Length: 83
Image 1: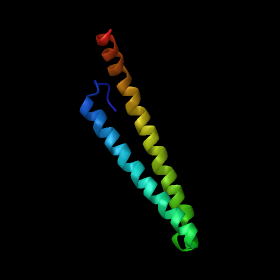
Image 2 (image 1 turned 120 degrees about the vertical axis):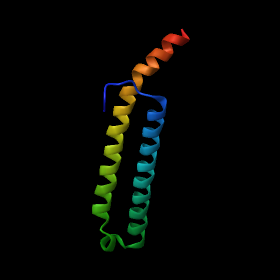
Image 3 (image 1 turned 90 degrees about the vertical axis):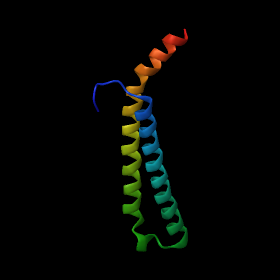
């Protein structure tokens, strides 16, 4: 990510992407749970599916933290204006 100021639009788009990725990971975990309850976990290779879901969740967490760190200076300026 660059050192230029963050825009509200960019922050919103980043949060939208994070939310979509987390929905996808949640769907994957739901499929895993259903497969395990139905006794299909061996046929669907739920271990690999879980690793993919964990990877997606971790990547999203890191990216969202990066965006949050970029957003903090903007919030500090907003707090100064309010005071």
